[in-house]
Image (tube, rainbow, N blue to C red):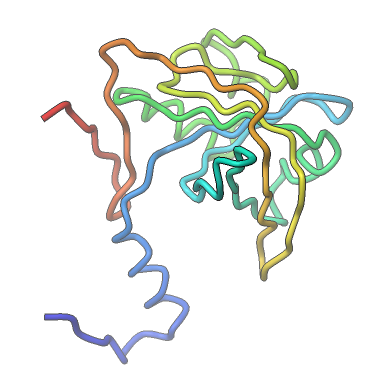
Length: 168
């Protein structure tokens, strides 16, 4: 049975409830005149397939915000099981050069870094930005998609922990 927790302020109650929504783990990358940057995000979702559009939520106070705002391109790299360490590195205060070190990166159409070990990568141009509270919602048109059809399984974040998905 659902219950309402009236002991917590709505902000904390909301955050605790959102932790119960499982989501794919993604590394969002960019490169261009403002330099190379990247961060970990679970706030990514499909908007439409015509045109192929997805959205990414980016905290306006984050250190990478200026690079994404100026470059206007990004790649959504969806992580595979076993890539938790990479997620933590891009999600923390690790210097930018160290975030990208030790992994193979390539590019597709926009020049944004594509993680070679990702399950899928959506190479995008930012088409529209909507500011909502503490975040910018980036509406991004996919101009190229690369898939890894190997034996990799997904990585999700649920209840403030990583979980590896298997085929069954």
